[in-house]
Length: 318
Image (cartoon, rainbow, N blue to C red):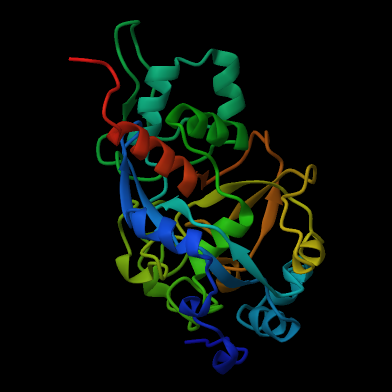
């Protein structure tokens, strides 16, 4: 077991956040979890408030010591560590599954050119053999996460579902909670809590079902924020953006080097790659993106708008 701690006594719990009266009222109206009807995603409320994002220099040195080749990782993009105040939002409890993505493909009916833009390879997804057939999934892989998709494929899915990709800040809060923990489950490495290159993964196995490893859940109950598949974020990747974030300007960059991916995959062998603060950038349209999937997000204000609109009585006379 490897523990990475800075100073837990200095960590401030989320309940210490100072919410306005309007934010407190909004929190009281928001459901903790919501089943999104378009694609079947289960969304978890991530409550408004501050959290600790990024790493300190001592934490980076401790992270490098976790693995034999840890010194080869350029982790300077994780500094400085800072506190970010985030409004209420929703994040998927699970990564998007093969079955959900097959539903999207059946409804969207993408052209061959679009498919080439969305996928590196069709792993466990079976295209229709005839015009009247739908997309199918290899039996037994329905609840495994969709993998090998580009940022454009992830974005297209979210748009079809009426959702969006999370920002990098939202993703890290969902994974880390408000106490600055190192891994989604805490500060101590535990290979039994995720699907990675080691642990219980069989030699011929890759991904696991999205509801596996419940003991590795984040403080908000999100599954597999570490391991299984990496997940696309909305943001362009800029290695030095944390300097601006630390100053209080949390706008995502307008441009960068590809797009941010988070979480680590089932085949990555280094423990440090599964920390909540680990970040990397991939080309958005790279055609060899293996074991990269997505998790959907939603503005809390959008959920309130939709649910309030549905609950309003009709103004038409009966």
